[in-house]
Image (cartoon, rainbow, N blue to C red; front, side, top):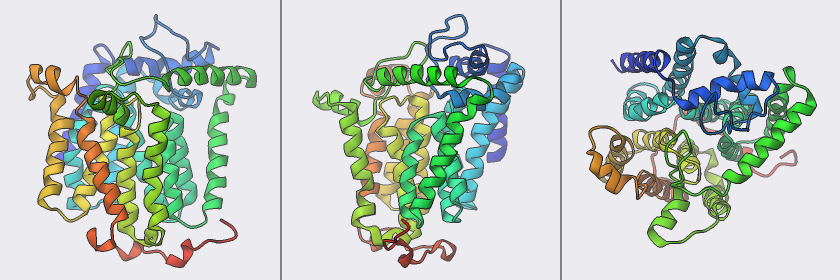
Length: 392
């Protein structure tokens, strides 16, 4: 039944967008490869093609080429299916059985919203989870590839490199990731000259420099308002306008603190899985460019945390608040006046995600007895593997 819901939703969204007016995001994606081939500046305005700006890497334009080659309806169908069902695959591999089914049901509204906006957030979420699974099976090349592709799509999946600290042979992984990332950075050389590619990266750098200073609430030309993460919550509630980079640096330090303080627990599967959940939420609440479709990443992290670890009343309450405030608030179930008077101006979607992240970080720092004791033997690693080694 749930699989049928995902299938029908993918087809319905594709028909609506493929034979009607496609979302502006998809118009941006679809035009990127032809623009790259034509030698146009990817990051300049192209009002005859779409609103807003292309803000992805030149490599993303090449990766999107197969979708751009299809007719519009088939292109949207293939893109939507890739996003929805790669995430389905990742979740069912991570959480087989009833847990996976419950997780997919709880994230459905977020997956649907991301599809309706033709966003890549479900795809990015899947890649981070697949990187986690690759690490668990000691496949560092697969982990490096998943993180590198995610980074080529959106920069913030680079945060998933932190998972490499939970596993042995870290120096080897760093070299594998560096080589993979270098290959992806050079990928557009298949269709453009080195000079033109350097110019594209320089142009992209200028756009990212401007975006780095953006504050939540500033809407893009063709998209929704930015939620602005923790930084915007500080501005709304306390009138504090701290630098995005400063807050993000502090958040990164807090994210990594459990690995430093509780490093002997990295051989515990629950610890590693909880870190994955925290990482997924972190990628949204400390992203100053987060939009409504971005929350599929954070909600997935919260849902995995909820379905895997022991369920208590307060966990269930926090999960319910997340679904209502983050997922249901953007549907027609919520009165329009309530959305406009409360949810939108206060950027409330960020709040339950912040609360969940604080709880996750506390549990990462707490004693093992305070989290789940269920540890699959297949995921157990020798603690000695994490002792300092000469080869990194």
